[in-house]
Length: 297
Length: 296
Image (tube, rainbow over all chains, first blue to last red; front, side, top):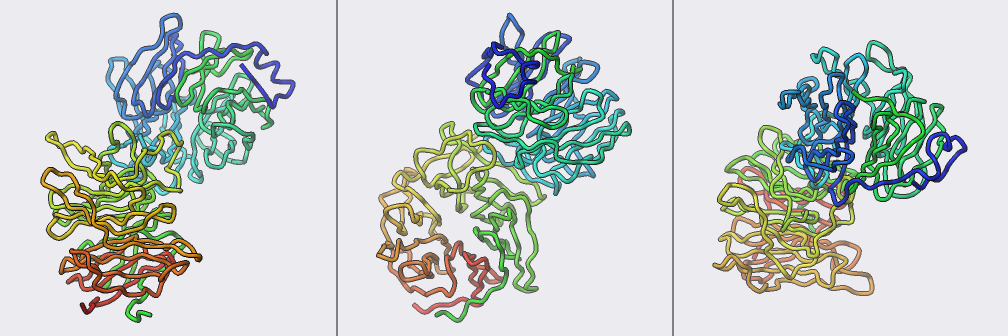
């Protein structure tokens, strides 16, 4: 795995000879990787390819669902149910254990969501997602209704009881990736078109305050602020120009993982959560880290 | 200089594009602002008709269904603006590929959508995943026997079609072909043959170039009540200037009327009796010629 822009701390995160394995290729806009710790397999989506995939180490990849409605970000809840940022479906979906798919949120103040982009769950059971509007306009991604109704592209919260959708952060430009710090006291949201990451103080009642710019992405190459995750040391991993930018909890760049192609997202996985799975427009890659990511589900 | 035109809406900072009459208001598109505005000739007020349009340019109102068909340049597709406020996509792909950036369209009596599909300097939304088509053609979207939208290529000799129109009898397709990047800029008439192919075009008008630059061609087309073709184009930058042309369907130029504003874009008739002429322009205004008339 090639790295650059490295500070000495990067040695503590990834070895010089870390592998970069290509697990899948020839796909159409991969996104939403998430590790299923119960089944020890990786899920991801092809947004334009309209497919949900899984990859089981030692076995290979297999289609789980097609068409999907051009779904995007994935995560798991504490019961092991797949949570989906529905993008062109304009919904938040949950895959139930009985095989059915349940819509758990689709409107705010009576208005249809724009196109839920990425999703994360808090340990208290509340669910958060970004609601950029790209799924209504980007060629190749076709919602049933492509009219936008909400004037802002915000970040939303579904209460732990699943009854209340609130707009958590209204003043976004084009929110995309989102993540909590390991202690869940910080909440990060990146802005694709501004090329930066915002940091908020997160409160136990599900509100945020003290928003500020955490880090401005720099460098050249394919990629924009898109997928974002956090490791157990609080380092923030964010897609950006050239690959994945690793940023310290204080907001300084530690180094960059150079990813072939246009990197879209990443997730931690395997039993020790030290494998990093990476999606690009057309491929899925895997590398190994020295640190664990925050466990999901 | 023509004294009949007056500014009825604007100025807008955005590029102005498509225009249509929906029976009550003049609808016109602001591409950069991603809004369709509505101008009411009676109240003389302009308000938002539809927001978040995604760089819609050409628009056409279907009075049978109250659906507005829209050439969404930014989304590289033709969409339907439905009366309930929603919007849906028609056909998206031609032979499996996402087509270019539709700029203008017209609906025929069989509810088929004829549209120009040129390239655009303005990128589509999102990552640039899809290459442009190898051709920039007039395309047609229609429903197949399963009522699904399908797309057909109609012209094979265009490089930058800018505006499209059908004759009153629906037997002729008029195309404003060419922009400042192409060798020719001309108004063409293609007969629509019984085998559903287009005949060889007849050229009604050709624009030139000189030491001052390339003469801007036609950007907007519509029919008047006689079936004559109203075409607007040109600019002050080079050539004879912004112009309204009136052609008979046989191709003879009935009249050319200099326009007092630069870079006319799209053109439509409106008002209760379709008595007014409206043109969107590059200076950011909507212009009206009330009780439009011309002498043959």
